[in-house]
Length: 152
Image (tube, rainbow, N blue to C red; front, side, top):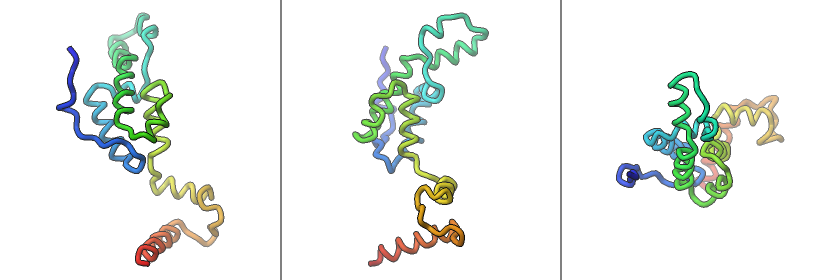
């Protein structure tokens, strides 16, 4: 019997890019509730690989959580919750794990630590005088500039 999750499924907005953080948390929870997060996290295992003898029943249970069918279900959920642009970026990827990792790489916002590392490596703002310029000073100037521009 096929399960109908339309009643149980929470309202999750489609991924547009800027909403990656809340979207990823909601989709992760949805995949967990459907028993599909393991296949996204670890990838699928082909049916040929599961046909051989295994050492423990725990290995068998772990492999049965990562079938190609479950991967296809997870992939369908992920693609169904993406807007057109993010969907175009993952459409040709084979597995749910590849899709999840690609979306994470494309849309996950930088935290302060990553932003600091990129700035100090001069990959974002190569012309800033960093010898007498601290990161907190940079953020303060950007914040002040934003508010001044906003008032104008």
